[in-house]
Length: 213
Image (cartoon, rainbow, N blue to C red; front, side):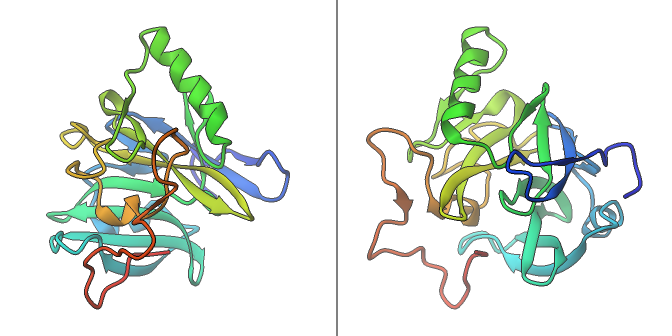
């Protein structure tokens, strides 16, 4: 893969070769820059192709989600666009690139390990951490939210990042700027909060549309 951002490595289990993407808070991640058009985003992901487009939430008709990946039906990266511009990126825990922040891996990690990293960074005054109404953690100052995803029977981390102008209350999983489809499913393991959203017997009002799996 071309470009200096494309340093390759194996994940902790040694099961796949990954690409490392550096997070530049509020500006971009890897080759993606917030504000890009869909065509511009596709052009800087030469090893991936656009797999599908979808509505990002039942009440978000102007937000378009685009799944990028190397294989059909196996997205690696989700980009969210509003007004034609990229404002949010989510990286799949199983197939996405390894997102790096200050030398720390954020993709496909054990949640408890990242919890310790975030608490240490918060104690040092480097990172302000807040929790959303459903217990999902985020750092609005750098536009980062940590979600989880079930991969091969274990819970692992999935970073979600927003650009400048969208960072305020990005951890707010009720009223924040991150699209609703990114909050569905397994929730961050925080004491006293539900393991899944929506709870059993409930579903978001998507009508005939379904969020990406």
